[in-house]
Image (cartoon, helix red, strand yellow):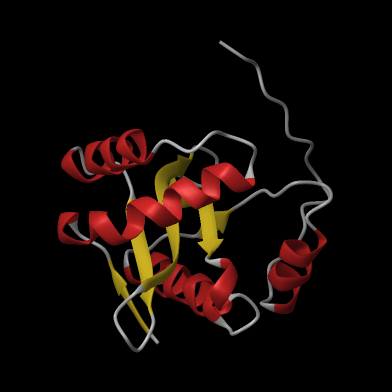
Length: 147
């Protein structure tokens, strides 16, 4: 398996994975919109994506980081918004390697942390994060306001 920071050249491999990720969260398939969304993120330098490729070159997973900042510490942070591994590649270490690539990248650009959230019932994801050294926030509740 090979993990690298994606570029626009990787969109055709990432788009089906991104579409699968959205379907996992209950959205209908829309490969064309997935491609366009990814293209816009690359074009506008709005995210950093890592892709995992199997030995045969097929894309088997990805993670997407969105840049942010902490006003309190006045430092760079990232939001790990997406992490997805194709069903055929699950339980093979792909997700852990993608998390590691994201952490290495964050350190390399001087970020102080990466934040993520997952569904309350996504026990396999929670177990993965905890096993990789992520800490569940005990100090803050998360709220959303729909616009």
